[in-house]
Length: 349
Image (cartoon, rainbow, N blue to C red):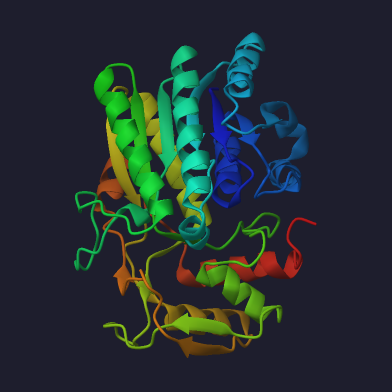
């Protein structure tokens, strides 16, 4: 079976994708700096997938992709061991919108330089199949009910700008040698939830910025209440509407994308991964309260600058080209996310 390099493989989405890859029979190399993740996560992945069967199929390297020599060594070592890396799923990068606004140089340095180095080293080692972890933050506000892949790209923060520029880089690389490269830019919306086992899940360092990790902390009585930004949006209940997707559905989408590129080489794809279903913040809170039988105190605050009223994916392209459909409900997301928090109140400690 093929060997896949997963950069940032100990992160939230990366770890669940590593598990999905192992379950599909792939060998994996995980490259992670562990700046915003924890190596304990790798042990949990092995436990879920059965340690005895998986321990020889997983290689873990602590590495910052800005170090080209270390990155090149990963590819060389895999080849010498008889398991050359044939594809890469690129998650590694910083991802806080608020932090990117405060420190844009940090984001440009980490996200762009890492991606440039990765492409260079892949090319030098004859590995040209790449799935890039992009984001719906590359879109501007179109006003449309559902956002498809042809919408204007107009990010409104430095984090989104780095994703946009890396996507442009991917297209330039593909255009330079169309018969050699196979690339997919996966734009996903709002991943939440956790693996049903409760052994891996989202483990934000410091204060979380996204609504679902905050809900978990409020439910666990770590934070007194959830602040909902705006109650006068043009939506059915006045709160912002987003497309929440279970992290395991997202992980499956990554694996299917990689397999599609293996089977259909020489193409570049921009793909939304979302459910196509909009859920308001209040609907998310009320579903969480009902399914887990727990209170989540909240109050309303002023709208935040840069927020949008509604961001929901048109996922018809991903459904057609990947034969992929998200199968887990918003109730599953709330149940699995809370199960992770209950079993791991302090994260990976």
